[in-house]
Length: 103
Image 1 (cartoon, rainbow, N blue to C red):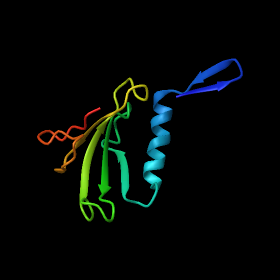
Image 2: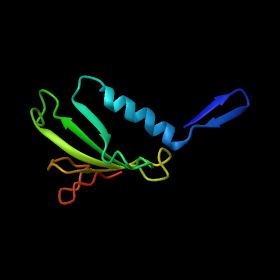
Image 3: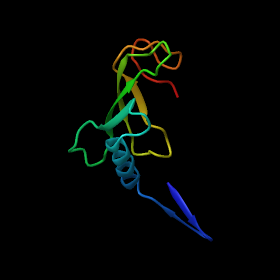
Image 4: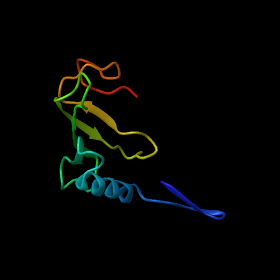
């Protein structure tokens, strides 16, 4: 993340950005249907994450609980994390065999 102030800009270190996101995930966001956190609390590079999504009301996913894994490589946040559903889900953006979400 880059912050601009007048003519200069400051680059926020990757881990600071991830710590901010971890705090939001631990506090809960929105209506509580999405949660996420570190997969391994000892991972000092904060690469491996886990998440849960509860299917939204009035959709084909209602009442279902989806587990996913996220991996934030060294290029995050310039490049998005890789996301893989561990629960089976039928969506056009998800490989039905591997659970990998297409970019």
